[in-house]
Image 1: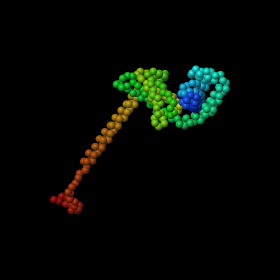
Image 2: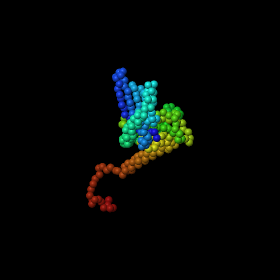
Image 3: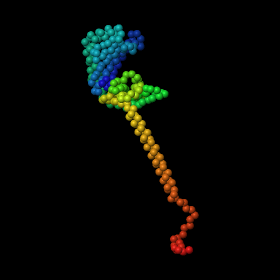
Image 4: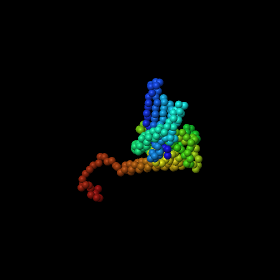
Length: 266
């Protein structure tokens, strides 16, 4: 799938003093690796002049595309040049194909699988529909895709998403939002696709499961409170019971047993 993708770019900047020191041309060569094993490789070369895109070569199309009148003429010339096609194929081999294993090893070593959580958030004032929030945390690299499914079909309306934001610890997080009105019998799923996942991660929204979890929490809290009450009552009972066997004695007179009067003596 396209989400299993890594981008590797090399930039060549050629500064031209023709008009001013600010005029320059820039060529950027990028290798896009797709698929679980990076088996699908696309090589793209872009030519910018003063930050404006002039031309682009795409190995999937196998030709140049121009974006200005002058660039259209140059693209037509390059596309008709057999040597230019051989040169692009050679560049793709040495920059992309020959480095595929190296790039894959480096990416997999640093990659971290996202942690995904699915929650419901009520709108201010208790308005409807509610909002489901699918959050992915602590993942790397940055490229990730979060998709909502309703009964297995992708949802495209009432969906919004944040950009992948840095956590501040070299990892990223992203949040996707779906306005949701509960309908009996339907299934809402958050699907997360990332480089580290061999298959998409699915989180199914189940309001009944949520209610059951809430009941478990309430029962657990009640049990905890009841336990505290029982322990406290037992401790108080023990203290009271112990107090009945403690009789302080003060001012007593001690004398030998043999001096005690005989039985029946007056």
